[in-house]
Length: 246
Image (cartoon, rainbow, N blue to C red; front, side, top):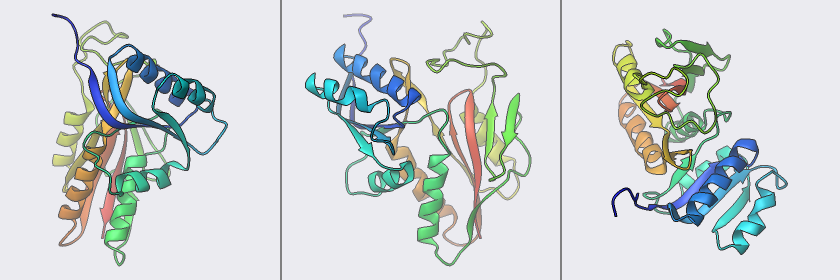
């Protein structure tokens, strides 16, 4: 039948945080599943608080047949167990939170420090800021950028026509940051984790892209110092950091 979208299929979907954002994403994914738009083998919400907002919906969701569970853990520890375990990540995805730390960069840092125990591995401030309308440098070397100078709703799917400007969305951070890395001296390249809309207003990052990025960083730094731009971004907003291994 024309106009019918195929059901999205995943192995495991990991929602970062069980608070206001995570609980909204969880409810949206449950709605998508109930209406046949999403199939998944497991949905895991990760939060340090066993009484977080998602905890209140787990029992009802499981009673309705949804494969939902809350994992009480810090985010960094969970990512290491998940991404460095023996399970197949090809069909797994992560739902990031807008207010989470730059977890993808933190995981790559931990992996690089394990790989090169005798080499200093740090986050350096950007040499020059990217050309975006809004940006802020943080004291820890991370850098936050946005093409929006307005407040965007959490459920914006960044369509081709921007809901705020009413005009075409003629910007996208992934290609812009790849070009930025290419023209920045001393930077080998960029690994960009693109959070894209999948269903019912929920954006995801494929787990396989994190593993591939770790392999790329290892290759760039195998024979000497390297500096890699790491970004977790949507089309409009992003968190950046320059991973530097001496």
